[in-house]
Image 1 (cartoon, helix red, strand yellow):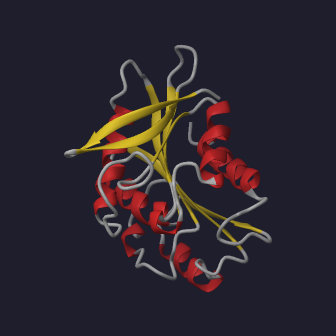
Image 2 (cartoon, rainbow, N blue to C red; image 1 turned 120 degrees about the vertical axis):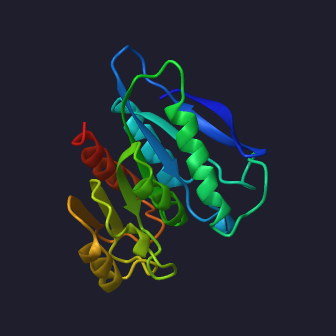
Amino acid sequence: MHEEKVFFACGDIKLEGALALVKGDTPAPLVVVCHPHPQYGGNMHNNLVSNITSTLSKEGFITLRFNFRGVGYSEGSYGQGVEEVRDVEAAVDFLEGLDPVETGGLFMVGYSFGAMVGLQVAVKDDRIRGWVGISPPVAMYDLGYLKGSNKPKLLLYGDSDQVCPEKEMAKLFGSLEEPKSMSVISGADHFFWGSEQTVAEHVKTFLSALN
Protein backbone atom coordinates (compact mmCIF):
# COMPACT_ATOMS: atom_id res chain seq x y z
CA MET A 1 0.00 0.00 0.00
CA HIS A 2 1.26 3.45 -0.90
CA GLU A 3 -0.20 6.36 1.04
CA GLU A 4 0.43 10.05 0.47
CA LYS A 5 0.11 12.75 3.07
CA VAL A 6 -2.69 15.18 2.28
CA PHE A 7 -4.20 18.27 3.83
CA PHE A 8 -7.78 19.35 3.28
CA ALA A 9 -9.85 22.28 4.44
CA CYS A 10 -12.48 22.21 7.16
CA GLY A 11 -13.81 25.73 7.41
CA ASP A 12 -10.86 27.96 8.22
CA ILE A 13 -8.55 25.16 9.40
CA LYS A 14 -6.67 22.39 7.61
CA LEU A 15 -6.71 18.73 8.58
CA GLU A 16 -3.96 16.18 8.05
CA GLY A 17 -4.72 12.88 6.37
CA ALA A 18 -3.20 9.84 4.65
CA LEU A 19 -4.71 8.92 1.29
CA ALA A 20 -4.25 5.56 -0.45
CA LEU A 21 -5.28 5.41 -4.10
CA VAL A 22 -5.50 2.32 -6.31
CA LYS A 23 -4.06 1.62 -9.73
CA GLY A 24 -6.20 1.14 -12.82
CA ASP A 25 -9.30 2.65 -14.36
CA THR A 26 -11.90 0.48 -12.63
CA PRO A 27 -14.24 2.44 -10.34
CA ALA A 28 -13.04 1.97 -6.78
CA PRO A 29 -15.04 2.17 -3.55
CA LEU A 30 -14.10 4.97 -1.16
CA VAL A 31 -13.73 4.60 2.61
CA VAL A 32 -13.24 7.22 5.32
CA VAL A 33 -11.79 5.78 8.56
CA CYS A 34 -12.17 7.78 11.81
CA HIS A 35 -9.78 7.28 14.73
CA PRO A 36 -10.49 6.95 18.49
CA HIS A 37 -10.58 9.66 21.15
CA PRO A 38 -7.93 12.36 20.63
CA GLN A 39 -7.69 13.13 24.34
CA TYR A 40 -6.69 9.54 25.09
CA GLY A 41 -3.96 9.24 22.47
CA GLY A 42 -6.17 8.47 19.49
CA ASN A 43 -4.87 9.45 16.06
CA MET A 44 -4.80 8.23 12.47
CA HIS A 45 -1.75 6.05 13.25
CA ASN A 46 -3.75 3.95 15.73
CA ASN A 47 -2.99 0.24 15.43
CA LEU A 48 -6.51 -0.69 14.35
CA VAL A 49 -7.06 2.26 12.02
CA SER A 50 -3.78 1.61 10.20
CA ASN A 51 -4.51 -2.09 9.84
CA ILE A 52 -8.00 -1.49 8.45
CA THR A 53 -6.84 1.01 5.83
CA SER A 54 -3.98 -1.26 4.78
CA THR A 55 -6.27 -4.27 4.43
CA LEU A 56 -8.93 -2.35 2.50
CA SER A 57 -6.35 -0.76 0.22
CA LYS A 58 -5.00 -4.19 -0.76
CA GLU A 59 -8.58 -5.18 -1.56
CA GLY A 60 -8.94 -2.27 -4.01
CA PHE A 61 -10.54 0.40 -1.83
CA ILE A 62 -9.45 4.03 -1.89
CA THR A 63 -8.94 4.91 1.77
CA LEU A 64 -8.60 8.10 3.76
CA ARG A 65 -7.60 8.17 7.41
CA PHE A 66 -7.15 11.56 8.99
CA ASN A 67 -6.41 13.36 12.24
CA PHE A 68 -9.22 15.19 13.95
CA ARG A 69 -8.67 18.85 14.75
CA GLY A 70 -5.84 19.45 17.20
CA VAL A 71 -4.24 16.06 16.54
CA GLY A 72 -0.88 15.66 14.80
CA TYR A 73 -0.53 18.32 12.13
CA SER A 74 -4.26 19.04 11.99
CA GLU A 75 -5.01 22.60 12.97
CA GLY A 76 -7.53 23.71 15.56
CA SER A 77 -8.23 22.23 18.98
CA TYR A 78 -10.40 19.52 20.51
CA GLY A 79 -14.07 20.23 19.81
CA GLN A 80 -15.81 18.09 22.45
CA GLY A 81 -16.99 15.63 19.81
CA VAL A 82 -19.19 18.34 18.28
CA GLU A 83 -16.80 20.19 15.99
CA GLU A 84 -15.29 16.85 14.98
CA VAL A 85 -18.49 16.09 13.08
CA ARG A 86 -17.47 18.92 10.76
CA ASP A 87 -14.08 17.26 10.36
CA VAL A 88 -15.75 14.07 9.16
CA GLU A 89 -17.95 16.01 6.74
CA ALA A 90 -14.85 17.72 5.35
CA ALA A 91 -13.10 14.36 4.94
CA VAL A 92 -16.07 12.97 3.02
CA ASP A 93 -16.18 16.06 0.79
CA PHE A 94 -12.45 15.79 0.11
CA LEU A 95 -12.50 12.09 -0.73
CA GLU A 96 -15.66 12.27 -2.80
CA GLY A 97 -14.29 15.28 -4.69
CA LEU A 98 -11.01 13.72 -5.78
CA ASP A 99 -10.35 14.23 -9.47
CA PRO A 100 -10.22 12.06 -11.37
CA VAL A 101 -11.87 9.38 -9.24
CA GLU A 102 -14.80 7.35 -10.49
CA THR A 103 -16.34 6.05 -7.33
CA GLY A 104 -17.63 2.58 -6.67
CA GLY A 105 -19.47 3.77 -3.57
CA LEU A 106 -18.56 5.68 -0.40
CA PHE A 107 -18.44 4.08 3.05
CA MET A 108 -17.70 5.13 6.63
CA VAL A 109 -15.72 3.21 9.27
CA GLY A 110 -15.47 4.64 12.77
CA TYR A 111 -13.65 3.25 15.79
CA SER A 112 -14.70 4.22 19.35
CA PHE A 113 -14.89 8.05 19.48
CA GLY A 114 -14.50 7.90 15.70
CA ALA A 115 -17.66 5.80 15.52
CA MET A 116 -19.59 8.17 17.78
CA VAL A 117 -18.61 11.12 15.58
CA GLY A 118 -18.33 9.54 12.15
CA LEU A 119 -21.61 7.65 12.22
CA GLN A 120 -23.51 10.89 12.81
CA VAL A 121 -22.41 11.80 9.30
CA ALA A 122 -22.86 8.31 7.89
CA VAL A 123 -26.55 8.07 8.75
CA LYS A 124 -27.53 11.43 7.25
CA ASP A 125 -25.23 11.87 4.23
CA ASP A 126 -26.88 10.29 1.20
CA ARG A 127 -23.50 9.80 -0.48
CA ILE A 128 -22.53 7.20 2.13
CA ARG A 129 -23.87 3.78 1.18
CA GLY A 130 -23.01 1.84 4.32
CA TRP A 131 -21.16 2.07 7.62
CA VAL A 132 -19.17 0.17 10.23
CA GLY A 133 -19.14 1.06 13.92
CA ILE A 134 -16.23 -0.54 15.80
CA SER A 135 -16.58 -0.42 19.59
CA PRO A 136 -19.05 2.47 19.53
CA PRO A 137 -18.91 3.94 23.06
CA VAL A 138 -22.46 2.99 23.96
CA ALA A 139 -21.72 3.16 27.69
CA MET A 140 -20.55 6.78 27.43
CA TYR A 141 -22.72 8.44 24.75
CA ASP A 142 -26.28 8.36 23.50
CA LEU A 143 -26.18 6.69 20.10
CA GLY A 144 -29.88 6.95 19.46
CA TYR A 145 -29.23 8.88 16.26
CA LEU A 146 -28.34 5.56 14.61
CA LYS A 147 -31.95 4.43 14.78
CA GLY A 148 -33.88 4.69 11.54
CA SER A 149 -30.90 4.33 9.22
CA ASN A 150 -31.78 1.81 6.52
CA LYS A 151 -28.24 1.66 5.14
CA PRO A 152 -26.24 -1.58 5.43
CA LYS A 153 -24.42 -1.51 8.75
CA LEU A 154 -22.02 -3.55 10.85
CA LEU A 155 -21.40 -3.24 14.58
CA LEU A 156 -18.25 -4.86 15.89
CA TYR A 157 -16.82 -5.09 19.40
CA GLY A 158 -14.76 -7.30 21.71
CA ASP A 159 -16.37 -9.49 24.35
CA SER A 160 -14.03 -7.99 27.00
CA ASP A 161 -14.73 -4.37 26.04
CA GLN A 162 -15.99 -2.40 29.07
CA VAL A 163 -16.92 0.57 26.89
CA CYS A 164 -19.29 -1.68 24.93
CA PRO A 165 -21.09 -3.90 27.46
CA GLU A 166 -22.81 -6.87 25.86
CA LYS A 167 -26.24 -5.92 27.21
CA GLU A 168 -26.02 -2.36 25.89
CA MET A 169 -24.66 -3.48 22.52
CA ALA A 170 -27.48 -5.99 22.14
CA LYS A 171 -29.99 -3.27 22.97
CA LEU A 172 -28.44 -0.89 20.44
CA PHE A 173 -28.31 -3.57 17.76
CA GLY A 174 -31.93 -4.51 18.37
CA SER A 175 -32.99 -0.90 17.86
CA LEU A 176 -31.39 -0.63 14.42
CA GLU A 177 -33.10 -1.09 11.08
CA GLU A 178 -32.21 -3.87 8.66
CA PRO A 179 -29.95 -4.57 6.88
CA LYS A 180 -27.64 -5.01 9.85
CA SER A 181 -25.06 -7.40 11.26
CA MET A 182 -22.93 -7.61 14.38
CA SER A 183 -19.63 -9.35 15.05
CA VAL A 184 -18.11 -10.06 18.48
CA ILE A 185 -14.35 -10.63 18.70
CA SER A 186 -13.56 -13.23 21.35
CA GLY A 187 -11.00 -12.18 23.95
CA ALA A 188 -10.66 -8.61 22.66
CA ASP A 189 -11.00 -5.51 24.78
CA HIS A 190 -11.48 -1.91 23.62
CA PHE A 191 -7.97 -1.69 22.14
CA PHE A 192 -7.96 -4.91 20.07
CA TRP A 193 -4.24 -5.57 20.59
CA GLY A 194 -3.45 -8.78 18.73
CA SER A 195 -6.85 -8.82 17.04
CA GLU A 196 -6.24 -6.04 14.50
CA GLN A 197 -6.22 -8.30 11.46
CA THR A 198 -9.30 -10.17 12.62
CA VAL A 199 -11.20 -6.88 12.86
CA ALA A 200 -9.87 -5.71 9.50
CA GLU A 201 -10.99 -8.94 7.83
CA HIS A 202 -14.51 -8.53 9.21
CA VAL A 203 -14.63 -4.97 7.87
CA LYS A 204 -13.23 -6.04 4.49
CA THR A 205 -15.71 -8.90 4.12
CA PHE A 206 -18.65 -6.68 5.02
CA LEU A 207 -17.74 -3.79 2.71
CA SER A 208 -16.67 -6.04 -0.18
CA ALA A 209 -20.10 -7.68 -0.14
CA LEU A 210 -21.70 -4.28 -0.75
CA ASN A 211 -19.89 -3.80 -4.08
